[in-house]
Length: 417
Image (tube, rainbow, N blue to C red):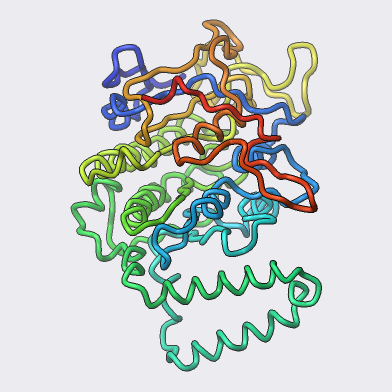
């Protein structure tokens, strides 16, 4: 790394500079450093994100549901007016958008359990009120017209009764939210500025984050704060009863964490994006008495390692090689995708405090050597924290579809207090 090592609140856990605030709350959480992503052939972001979110390798013969949809379907809403599954920060009109849509869905479970998508957290309030200047009667006319369009759409003509009814229920749920007091939770202008500054230290009222896509390094710098507002919005939504909330720094090919160039500069900005909001979310939930019954997961689909992608004797297309010791900042971040070890941070939800799980080798390629964690066991652990059996299944096409791969996921009991 081109960043110096720093201490955390736990003696045997070290981070690199730029994560000082998360380091300060490490005594509330667990660090898994032995997550091993699945062998899916080529190590590609969208394929591994699909597996991370569904527990299954793509493609599947049925539309596999996102784990958030499984939680929504199994537990139902805590607040009937609030979507059980909310997804904050990801757009789908960028590179690989269709691949992202493939797992950001309720799949065969039905539209009503799918995500309520909020690409820009600072604009979340717009999603829960009619367009400006539209009268209530005209808005209701649109609702009626939409139902007529649905009847004539491919879903209406060729979909099952369940699919049609689920889509209509999702529409009813959205309208229920518009008139609910819970809609105020989506409006970040109601949050005191002092609180916002704890999540986004450089916050400026009215700032928008729809910056132009740019690989010069300016994009990451100009969008610092978007993830922070997403975490603040997540806290507000958790308080009014949202079941499952995902906040992303957003996957865009070759930007954000996808560091293929200017790695040191990008990493410094990405650390700045997550450090204050993650730590403040932990502290806020703790202060409100919600941390023990809210599970926070900070993760990515795989990691990067100071080793070339592929096998030592079998290079891949566009192979990039970098030296063992990074002496030039321009080489940092050029390392290829790596699935043999990765880190996950957990806070709350009955998870141990100040715990370090797993061990990696001391020498390249730094593979996992103890307490390997795979996706089906990780999902089983997350579901266990929410009271859901990893053997739970739903029937589709007259066969069971398990919430962990083939029902084989086993909770990692060492993670729990």
